[in-house]
Image 1 (cartoon, rainbow, N blue to C red):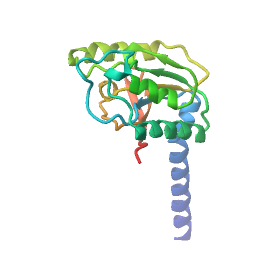
Image 2 (image 1 turned 30 degrees about the horizontal axis):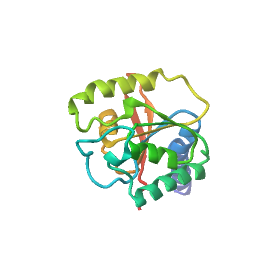
Image 3 (image 1 turned 60 degrees about the vertical axis):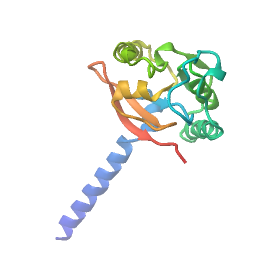
Image 4 (image 1 turned 135 degrees about the vertical axis):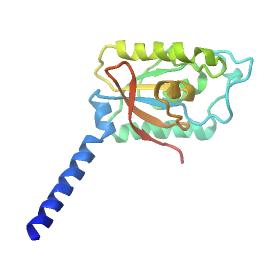
Length: 188
């Protein structure tokens, strides 16, 4: 009976340790096995006004003060997990660019494929397919990849509806898809 208990306890500890080490999304991000899809931080409201123009933040829904603080906290979370610099791509919408810049992880590159198609749902499939192709064609880089975009884009890629400022750790599937390996909320 004692041998059986010892075996069961050893098996449980081994399984628990294996699961913990196999499920470290930050390690996978650091070593390039995954990337992060980040929905922009808190920007109260839905969609944008009809007169919205890229490059003119006064025509867009923007981060609130709480959203700006949330974006800074997300950047701190990256640094606490060993990532002080990343390759950061962002939608051209101000709320995404502000989130990306407030992370403090380095230069931010605007990528039109990450722009919202909320007001034009007919763009969902072709834009999502183009984004998948872009992700798959990117050459490997020595830094972690962080992609800052909108709920509709993330949902189009993954089927998941993320909260504001939510991190989705993802990897590229052999079939051309995107697989989410972990989710982390940054809401207060």
